[in-house]
Length: 256
Image (cartoon, rainbow, N blue to C red; front, side, top):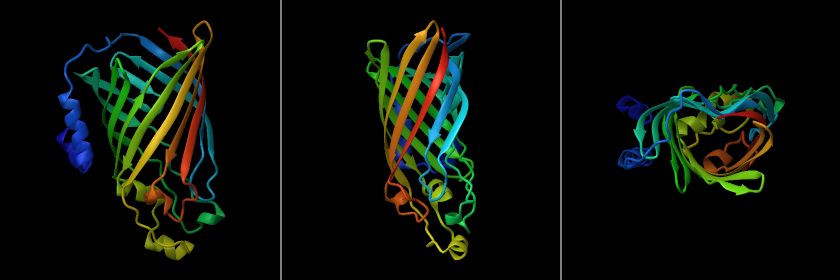
């Protein structure tokens, strides 16, 4: 863990999150079932790009919000549960990201392609009587930057539907932001865009997920999330949006 913290260039926010994890009292965790439980199926993922000239991403991929013993999948986050911690476990996790892009549009001539980030790190999901709390601290292998995030989700049944409002915040290091939205001096000379070296970014996030049974073990799951970019992202000459909406529509089979 010490090596991971050095890789993340630990800052007060990260140190506070890790300290909070260790200060959580002992509670009964959900038992680890030696079978597949949760939702597995297929989904259409929609991700508009905030970068000039880059087409929106719409892709069909497998969908899973499920557990199998210590292994878990939460849509775009995969990992393994290790030590019991509070109302959950200390987790080793990796994130699937489609934030990268090919700079093949005419408006991006002279700009290099940006690889998809591959964040890996530690986290926890705390399933408390007040709702679900998610904390993650990632090191991105593509940018050598850091991604920290904290979020909360509640469960609100309404007839056949169940809604899950979500609120959170994401903190990306300067290296992470620069990897996606920075402009080097060489790129500036080739493209005509001003050189840009962004600082770290703090992004508030709101979301809403919903699910409805379709009969038997089948269900329809919907999810929408909105991020509001701060000046570190908005001021990039490559960016032409102040916010980003993402969503998915999934057809899944619920294993019990």
